[in-house]
Image (cartoon, rainbow, N blue to C red):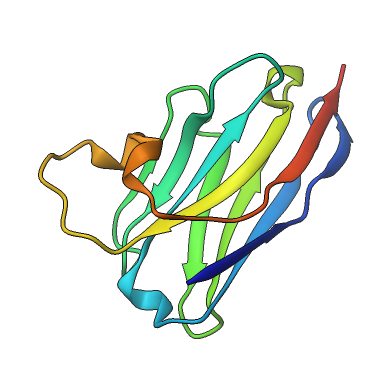
Length: 127
């Protein structure tokens, strides 16, 4: 599967952005999809993940209550609605997908568990 992330930009603190991840090349509903982010000088970190049918969603504590992940399998799209943005949310955001069988319950937080990655979209939050 190929992934294309978009929707980043410059926004003031307290504002909102919606990121999109478009998928192509395979049956999208077979894949769990996550968003990660990488700030300058920091490691890539987990943000949110949505399972195959969208029935389960997981969030990093730092974004819980502010960000919402969703998917539309008919359109091969995953979205990340980001509200109440803070300067510390500034990063390049990546969408990632995987369809493999996992052996532990928190696998979705581990970036090494995802075989497919989009190119990243930059989000800058000014104070």
